[in-house]
Image 1: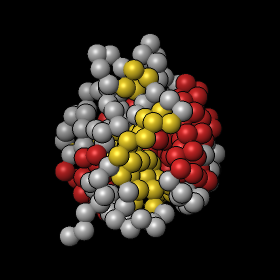
Image 2: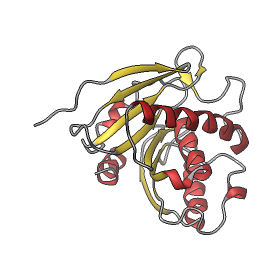
Image 3: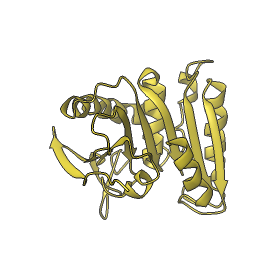
Image 4: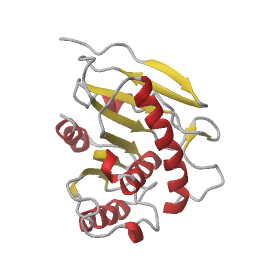
Length: 217
C-alpha cells in the first residue's frame, strides 16, 4: 500500500499551515481542513485520513490565540454565535492566504474543497457563501451557519454545490437544531445537502466517518 509523503509545515505571512501531499504529486485535488476553537493545524489529521489519497491536505492554524491554549478563527471576546459579518472578515483574510498557498504549491486547480469542525465548519460554510465559484464540496462537522448568512442566499446561488452535514443529536456545544437549520437554508439556495446524524455529543460519530470517506472518495 502506497503511503502519503510525510506532512510538513509552512509559515507564510504570519500564517502557519500543515501540508500533506497526495500519493500522486501531480494531482490537483485539494481540501482545506479547518479546525475548531482551541484546535491547531494538526488536530484535523484524523479527518484527513478519511479523504482519498489523491487529495492535497492543507490544514491552516487559526489566526487567533485561544485560551487556555490552541487557536481559533475569531477574537476571544467574540460571541459563540458571532454573525456572518464577523466570520466574513476572517474568511476574506483566509481566502487571500489560500491563493498564496496554492501558488506556492504550484496547484492550478480553479476549485478546492473544504472540511471544518465546529467553528471551523462555520468558517467553511461562510467561505462557500462568499466564494461559491471556488468551492466544489464542503463538509460541516458539528458546525453551524452563522446568523445573518440567510440574507445572502438566493435561489440557485449554491446550485451544484455538494454539502455534507454531520452532527451529534446530543451535542451540547452546538445544538442539533443548528445543523438542521443550516441544512434547510443551504438546500433552499440550491446546494445538494446530505445530512447524517449519530447519537453523540460534540464530535463525529461512526456514521459521519463513513459518510466522509464516501463524500471525499
